[in-house]
Length: 232
Length: 114
Ligand SMILES: Nc1nc2c(ncn2[C@@H]2O[C@H](COP(=O)(O)OP(=O)(O)OP(=O)(O)O)[C@@H](O)[C@H]2O)c(=O)[nH]1
Ligand SMILES: [Mg+2]
Ligand SMILES: [Zn+2]
Ligand SMILES: [Zn+2]
Image 1: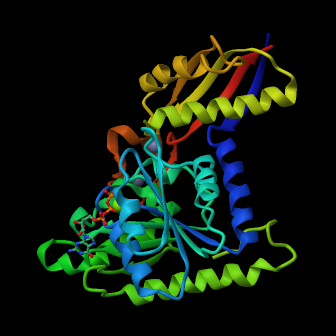
Image 2: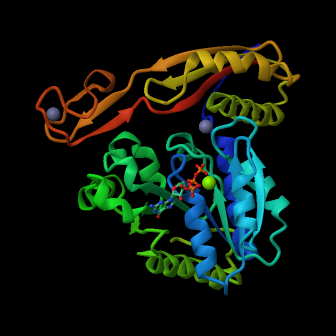
């Protein structure tokens, strides 16, 4: 019997799986966006709006849910490729589960992929799924103090979508105070206030997504592709 | 449940080490659990027994949790303080320009194996 010092992060094996998936997505020329938020903040509604607004793009959606199938059915009804991933009780997606979902999606012709992560602001932030873009949604009814309560999620995200802005008149949500708090935690984050209901702000978000997709496509044939992830 | 996922990742990480170093049995795992890591040590213990029974390498191994206190640093006065007691506001000078130094992570410190 001997003692072996490891000092290894518990997510070390996950980080390796995540890097492998990211390299594979880059080689395949696909953009995977990991969508995180609390339950009910408008993930499925936002994805549906993006799919409806951009008929020229082929989408694939992985809906992670602890139990039900309803979200995948909503996406399916729009004619986009969708699969439901049951996490069997687990409250977040990890890179291994995301890789299995990507395999199951058989997204040969899809180019822009979304992973709707399980609805909570805590642990999805701790697990790299292998997506090239981490997008989080904060909806107006949740309040502008969430960056103070769940800093890690805001630090790990590349994009913050502030959703349900049509509800701003009914809530004391201070958009500029919220943005300040978020930028203090993560100066590089992009912030898009949108309403999926009225379509307000959707164009800016969609243009940004297309820009990222084009970047992946341009890099696809780069000789070093698969070895490094293009910086966003 | 969050803790179950962590237990699976710990076992996977140790299985990788075991394959590299030709280990066949792990009898103990020492884990450093940050005080504000969003992991509940009792829940970890509960899933530990269950998950280890499914791995020949890990079967019967003991999990020892060492709690790492959370410490926050104040940029205004340069002092540190206990995060759990005072949260975001520095007790020395009242500043809110503070950030967490340690105590939010989970790490495998060491294992006993043969
Ligand atoms: N007013 C308003 N309501 C919205 C908007 N987007 C979504 N909602 C409503 O918010 C509720 C939840 O929306 P979903 O899209 O199902 O939210 P979700 O994050 O996918 O929910 P879960 O998958 O259950 O976590 C629904 O009643 C939507 O109609 C919006 O832009 N404005
Ligand atoms: Mg949904
Ligand atoms: Zn979790
Ligand atoms: Zn101070």
